[in-house]
Each structure stands twice: as C-alpha cells, then as structure tokens.
Amino acid sequence: MSVRTAEQEKNKERMNYYQALSTIQQTAYNTVQDSKIMIVSEGANTMDIGRSLFPNEHPRNRLDAGTFGTMGVGFGFAIASAVVDPTLPVLLLQGDSAFGFSDMEIETIMRYKLSVVVVIINNNGITHGVDDINVTEKPLPNVLTVQARYEKVAEAFGGKGWFVTDGVEQLKKAIDEAMTWKNGGVRVVNVMISIHSGRKEQQFGWHSRKTLEAKM
Image (cartoon, rainbow, N blue to C red):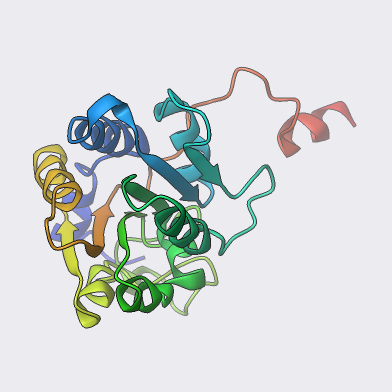
C-alpha cells in the first residue's frame, strides 16, 4: 500500500450515500410542484438506499431494477418515462457501475430531444472502489477508474454536466441547476462520495450470507 495522498485525506470528508441521496431528494422535490417526479434508479447501494429516502407520494412514479437488480435497465426506463409523459420530470439515479451498462443511451435522449436528469453516485467502483489507483499492484475487477468524468459523456452530445466533489452545498447547487435547466436534453450530475460509505446495518439479517453461515 502507498502512503496516503492528499486526495485520500480529502476523501474521508466526502459525503456518504445517505447525505448525498437525502440532499438530492430534498433539492429535486423543491424544484417541482406537488412532488411529482418520475424516479428511476438502478445499482446496488444507490438503488437500495434510495428506496428508503425517496418517498412514493404518487402512484406509478417510481421504476427501478427490481429485487435482484437487473443492471442496464435504468436508461431504458428513463427514456420510456420521458416519452410517455414529457411534462413529468425524469430523475435517473445510478451508481457508477450501473451508469456504464447503458450510458450511450444519452445519445438517444439527445437525438429524440427528450429531457432526463441523470445523477451518478460515484464511489470509484462496484460496491467499493479505491481512492488512489496506485494502491493496488494490478487492476481489480471491482475497481473502476478513479474520479472518472462521466458527466462529459453528456457534454459530448450537447447536454450539460456537473462534477460534484465538494460536498452538500455544491451538490444542492448542481441538482437545482440540473432540474431547472431550460434547454432540456440530458443533464448528468456526477457525485463523488466516500469509498468507505455503505448501507446502515439492517435490523433483519435473515437474507444475509453472514447470517446463513452462522446457522449452518
């Protein structure tokens, strides 16, 4: 392992899932009337934690990847939602791994002049990444490119991107701007969170491998 870098020290102060998702929820709903937003989500922790932080106040206003997380459906759901009701804001929440499954659908969104806000909860990896690629001697399958600039994919097709690294206030500003962006199209907010963040300990552990192994 290498000596801790300044970037690693800064990472300790980054948001966790709950801070980031709560901020997104509160800010996004403040920009619309009657709390009517089509919420689409996929990923592991991003989707699971988001279910508890984004209330369903209206019927048929939420789509996600389901119990077993069929990855890659997020953009398809978001596009379908934007087509069915162009007046309903569409907010797609994804982990950085989930984004990579079908992110080129950004081109489809722009070509058909649809309106979708994409928020990526980015921890540099699948479940957990690293904050310095040099801490490993060789690439690991669960580690993605550190601080990948995913928002620039939107910009490549004429959309708008934000890169959030400085915490809650910067995130609030980015979400507010993305949700109220008058030009429509695709807007991607790439949010860096701590690589150490995870979900809270669950009250019921019947579904966990650790619990199952203890019973064997």
